[in-house]
Picture 1 (tube, rainbow, N blue to C red):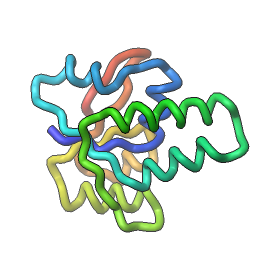
Picture 2 (picture 1 turned 90 degrees about the vertical axis):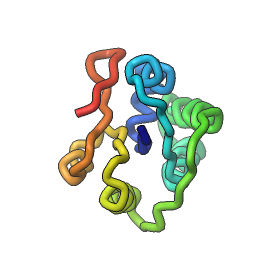
Picture 3 (picture 1 turned 45 degrees about the vertical axis):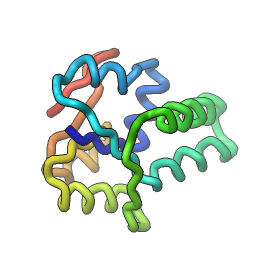
Picture 4 (picture 1 turned 30 degrees about the vertical axis):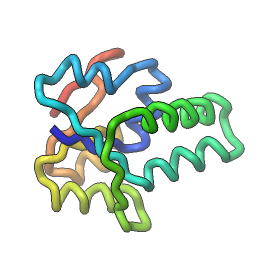
Length: 125
């Protein structure tokens, strides 16, 4: 099963101390292939470098460390807006699951979505 990671999903998991990679491996029987858009990596780098909340900067830094350790496929969305790129990618790759918490994005996507359920759980809807 391929899971496409969105920035807000990764950051929320970090802030809530959810080890999404291990939890997904335990929860789902299929082998998981993580898909990470280069634009998501760029967003995390911007958050890490920007003036803002220290909590956000630390979460972005840890997120970058975690995704660098994941065995993943890196993709280029080739879109100015990351959300539009995610939607286009999913339209072309219908079997891919999107990991996001973004309400607007969830409404636009017709494929399955991986969300955080409760405080420490993952669920595909």
